[in-house]
Amino acid sequence: MKNLSKKQKIVITVLASVFLILFSVYCVYENNMLTVTDYEITNEKLPGSFDGFTVAQISDFHNTRSDFLRESVLEEVQRLNPDIILITGDFIDSRKPKTEISLAFAKELVKIAPVYFAPGNHEARIPEIYGPFEEELRRIGVSVLRNSSKKINLGGEEINIIGVDDATFYGTQDKFISTAEAINEISYDKYLFTIALSHRPEVFSVYTEKKLDLVFSGHHHGGQFRIPYLGGLYMPTEGFFPDYCEGVHTENNTTMAVSRGIGNSAFPIRINNRPELIIVTLKAGIND
Image (cartoon, rainbow, N blue to C red; front, side):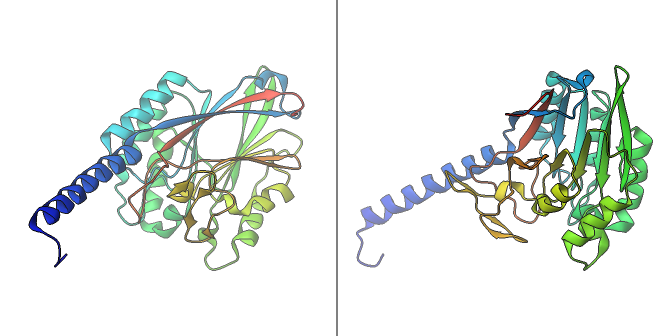
């Protein structure tokens, strides 16, 4: 800038300052303004009594510090009044595990609908903190599914809901093998329609191999930065433009819903990727 006039330097400084201010406002907006995504998923295996059954998914909460965002999620879940609420891992953050935030949030959720939880990689990283946290979740009424299952009964008909431990609980073992072994540990009626909570979407091939009907995942935070028409930019474990970082994916008879998540972890900025609450309405019948 040596050859620029004083006036030109002032103009450049002002423009740069305006850009930084606008960018900061945009980042605050993108990280705190909730979006609600609705999906309708049809499966011929779903019992007729569950036609219209609604599921709210909250993923990658990371004990978010934003009071505004937490309140927005609770208000939306209250308004939508789902039949069940699923929390699909990374409810706390291993780097700053403010468990009291997530526990207070869970206490409000259980007032709305039955809550089911399966842990993610952040819970697995801090066993000394996660153990007491899990006990407290159970105490306040959250159904914690650790390679375990429950049945939901409606109108005399039943479906399964299972929770799959994240591969991080298995140490350095291959995540595809770990996930398959975790599912193998679960005792459930495979003839019933099965909803699975499993944190990692990149092991979708395992879910299809195990013939799970509907899987709810998160983990990828929508790719953190989302580029129009190209999707999520990057996931540390998957590289650039990961295949499964949001949306609904179906292969054979398995459908997977992937949430972009609520909070952030190591990288605190989302771009074109607002926090997401997913609402799924189940329909009985043949999916076109």
